[in-house]
Length: 305
Image (cartoon, rainbow, N blue to C red; front, side, top):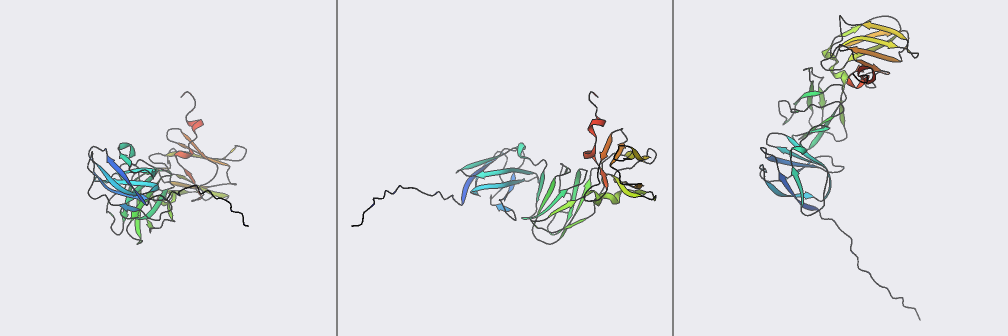
């Protein structure tokens, strides 16, 4: 006789999240209407536009359908072209909510400019702030797309376009110097680099022709001049000194010169007496690119002064 083992079935259910949820978007801005909403989802290769119907006026709220779950970035554009955003947002309750206030205004880090859903990303690897970005291409505005906040060193522009047709971008620094043109196509796997080298054409290239190890120093600071250049060896002894007081290196100027061997440290002084130092050239240009990041704070701002 086969033994019968009683089995007790315990009821359980596996939670299956819904495909979408309702999010109440409240516009708490005083004088701007929300004209569009776009979503950047995890591992997405393009933006997802959200249907909001008519613009959401100041003081207004609207229930909008969002995909359920985690969203990398929710991007709001107003009727003035200003970008507001919410990062790392999880739409998980029903209804959920987002309140758009001045605190959500785009300020730095990543600047999104929406003219489509396909990305062109450019990272600022220069030592200067970028004040203007001019673009030329299919369905792109023929004017500055950046707005009042500059792209600082290390920050990025993310231009969203309609197609993979090539477009051109020119970046202009705070002094009005323009970069070489970047020809770019939309590709989520590519980040274009804006480098100091792309601005060198704006300055004068000074040089000497002595025997020995050749190296180049560049002034990559806005509205600042370098009045001396010194090279030190491993022991801290000076192996070269240029007094440039009468012919200072202006923004984007370069000086190519020689020492008996590669210097261990290159030091520059600006017109205010501040000292900058670098122990190696830039990995992208091979040049000693002096900017505010190479400022020697211990020397330039001694304690108590």
